[in-house]
Length: 261
Image (cartoon, rainbow, N blue to C red; front, side, top):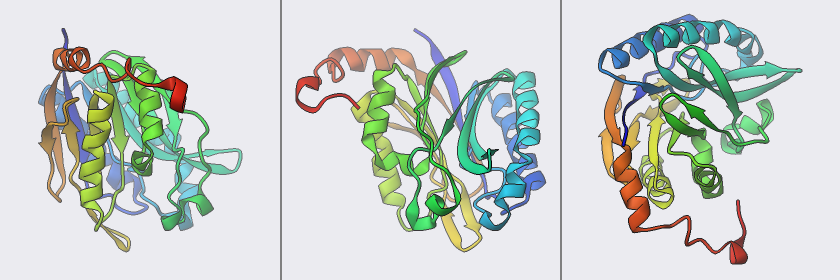
């Protein structure tokens, strides 16, 4: 049974400064690859943050940002996931891009927009989930506020996800919600979680970091503090298969009572 070295990249996003953030991201990808990582997850809207006033102009630079990350992942033989502003037909989406060693395998537009922070005023919502086969396994993607909607995670699990990657900008004071929900999503779906949050001050918000890598049993394999850092941990897929055989949650579901997500 295979093993995988996964990583979460956590840094303070410089609001609206694409070049500074791109330097942080590419440097971090290099460091995690040097430590043996095969999968790296970057934070939500990592190229610019929620700079709503300038978001259209910033989104126009996303193709350039993607090209740089694709080339970096090609050089490092790395799979990466991170969300960026995507502009299409006048609408901006919060879109997570899945890159496998340089190839863009797919993208996921955030389904649940956080109205408390006015996301629904400035962004369009996605209308589809994503699970994809990659060189490191079958990956599902969710973004930040999606974490509060277990239906999405069960849908990803039923579609065969082995790892769910979660780029996020989850601010204080809701850090215990973050920690609890991440473990719950891993335990109830019996899969690995890689969650990359940003940290420190961005605009008027203070982010607590606490990026995590979690096992299917809910064990925290690595957890960050509030500073810029990169987490690396080994995922043992045999552990996941054993757990699924011991407690066969997906097979024991009652679709006849509550249906499917």
